[in-house]
Length: 271
Image 1 (cartoon, rainbow, N blue to C red):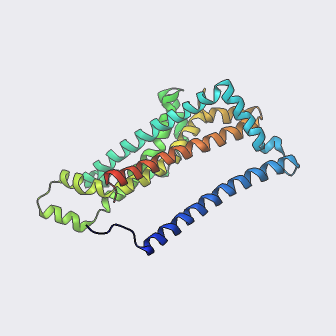
Image 2: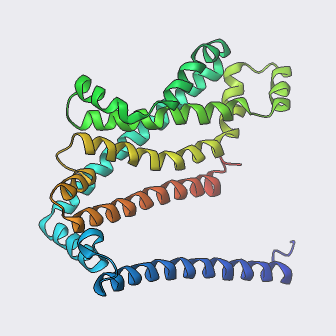
């Protein structure tokens, strides 16, 4: 049997990579702690106005109060559910439309200028329209999220589909493969990296859509807390909501990264 023991050079390389990864993590944690300490010290010494920018201790007290009252989970769950709905709908529908446009070159050429216009249009302008059409509720917030992520997904995935290796396409065509077989066997598998790049982008875009929607119309959610806190000049609540929002977005982003790593390692679907 062949010897599977890594060579000394390979072991040295792996140790160097582990040290580099550890150094990066340590520096990241240090920068976060340094920023929080500087923020707290600056507020306590009067270098900054704690009433305007708050400070970590006051933010922590606010988050604790929200947790103890049960409001934290209500608002966090509301925003996360709306974000997940818009994220999934935007990604699935955008990918399906991109497949349709790849399938029909004629349809793609017809719709191309409209996609460009929709992509350039500020989506906040659509908020009041969704509220009038759909109503002041969760559906209009999800629609806002969908509007932001849908066009980006379509354009990114369509560019990936059209960039598929032409030589491989010619090979499959020469072997008599149908358009559906080319899609399933080559185009979709070759664009899994593009799909996950789009997913990573859509995480942030979905949160933007939800927060903008909650700014306009909501009775719960992190966006609601931010607006309410700013209206009553409670900057502790505003900063606490922003930090909770950042943590939730990071968790969602990490889930996408974990899913990508899982598919790559165990299913081998990503090149």
